[in-house]
Length: 303
Image (cartoon, rainbow, N blue to C red; front, side):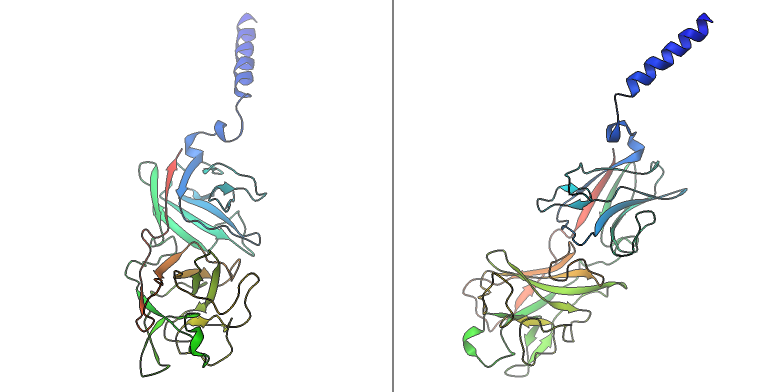
């Protein structure tokens, strides 16, 4: 009886000490992953991010999360959380970690097909990249292109700084040749052009799948367009913007976007080409587009 009493007392003391630790701090490192990532953009309309691990016994997911405008992780209720994510079970034997987007119809119980970054887990750490086969699976390092600042959809020569077209001038006045060298995207993804004005306002130029075709929408012009993606900013100006605009000092870039997008007017995290319009530049010459350095990536560490 004395021995039983001592064992029972020791068990109660251990349980009392353990009850003081709860939540994330109580989890062993094999159940937690610290995710470090720059450039992740906030999702809207209930879209969320989620980290997954491929283990010997199957897929293991984290809690869903988003990012705020300051880049900090937030939970689905909008509360700031740590970038150390709790996994639903042991991931110490995981071979690959990958980041997905959960959108309409996706469940946090199984991995979404909307995969973005992935990397092999070695010695408790992984570098997640777009090019990994379990991520987006596309290598953008050789992507390139050019764009022209012009407004070919109208006959007003006074607003030529208010349009951008992803091509080069060819075949005389009004002619454009395709210039984009972009890899094919997997099903469920497409490209989209954007212009960020000098005051920080971002305007879309339209979505597209090929650089030698018009894009999917004439958002801000009404005339005939060149047979390349692009946009004239002449009509239907968004609130707070006055057309025509002067693109001097603007950043022009192309992203990879989900076809089932959370917000068609906002750029995704996957920026693949970028260039600038220097102030006072000669509009007769095209401007170059190059992959950003670095492309979107992340590091993940068992923590």
